[in-house]
Image 1 (cartoon, rainbow, N blue to C red):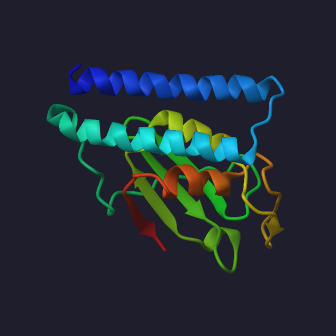
Image 2: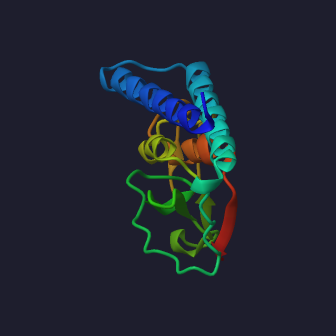
Image 3: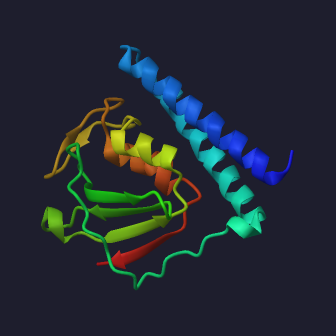
Length: 171
């Protein structure tokens, strides 16, 4: 199987995993914290392999957008979050923009750009499908161990722990 066929097969497999998991949860099923971690690990490792394959297919390489590029308007996060203020995904460039809460106010935090984020990873992230490993609260939100939606836990497990290069694009 050539790298492009392998890439397509891997992407399709990961889409099926996400779809099956979503159907399970929508049907009332619950994942244990161990299962959530295992799922996040599978998606992260699959994402790493996809990036490796994309790099091997030179004609499909895409230039990484420069940090000087204009920052898009980021809509507020769809779920309350203790650390994520807003985000936006560009599926054409597989680029995720995330604005974090600031120290003083929710709108005063930094904005980062994450490159090469596959759409299926973004879909899991935007749903906040990975539960937190702890319970706690800050001035922005309260969270409970294993309870979703959790944008922060999903961000950490899927994006920050993943193979996605990032750039701080605004302080």
